[in-house]
Image 1 (tube, rainbow, N blue to C red):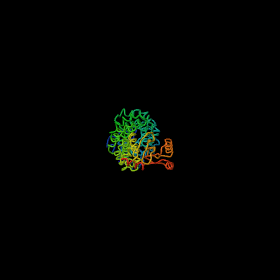
Image 2 (cartoon, rainbow, N blue to C red; image 1 turned 30 degrees about the vertical axis):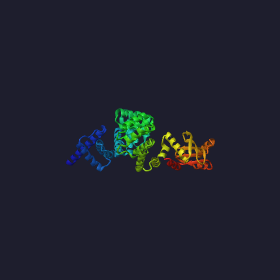
Image 3 (cartoon, rainbow, N blue to C red; image 1 turned 90 degrees about the vertical axis):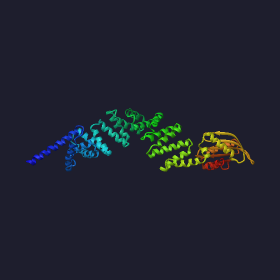
Length: 444
């Protein structure tokens, strides 16, 4: 008789515990605040699960506790078996199990399982904010942006002012290059969170992409000192100012970006690369080379850094070649006049005409030596590319037209094989970069 009474008592206790857990689940997941209650439920449920790992009542009890305590690994493990035990449950219970399974999976980075849970829950309640938002967020993090948009928009139908959903919709539209659509979302986020630097940076990128450079520049200039987005902001600011030919300000932007600590390698390389190019444009080759060599030391093979180092190291060491290639037009023409004046040793030289064109500069000079006197036309190319036959044909025609005795063509680049063959038996003398360098070295 006593054994029967004890058995009845245990059954009543278990039923009470299960009823309490299910009531908690159906009542929206209210927290089981009593530590004693939690411990007792977990002990009892654990015993039952040891005998039957798929005991749905026990899984519901511990799942609710773990979910409320945000013990996501255990919560996921509790709700996962319940996903296969949906038959016969009320829609509200199915929804709650699916939602919590999805949350537990997402929090433990099981994104495939998380989508399964949220999509199951969405079939029951397609308008639930948390379900739609989480699906949108997962697709965003997995870079499936087209799939993320409808879920985030649906979430905002329910909660139109939800800042987090607005933020990720803005980021998603930005990633899809729908910059104009992203801007209103980001503006709403910043109206509520004006100190949200990530959202402000994203807005700056959108302005940059739609060509609103003034607005983008204001944002990036403001964010240059931010530890989080400062390096990238400084890079954007510098690029905008470089394109506007505000080189001194661009250099300042890039240098501010490089002052940050723990800069991602790709961003630091871009900052140095752009800083070097800005320095080159201001003809500060020595400082430009410092940045290029820094890139080369950490990222060999980065873009055209190796060729830039080779090119500008030579220019840094050869002032005349530097002037020939990079100086302003007046300095370049002055150098060409020196070449003409000293090209024929001990000759009297009278410069008759200087023609500065887009592709080349011509100098016509009377040359009078002890052995001969004639008209000579010098043509100078600043380009480092290859000069072809057609250009030399045109030059030869001009020599004949002016009845000059000779034409001398100089380039900082090379001549094609066809161009060299054309000069055979014609009064044309070609000076490629190597020969030009020898000439430049003779004029001091």
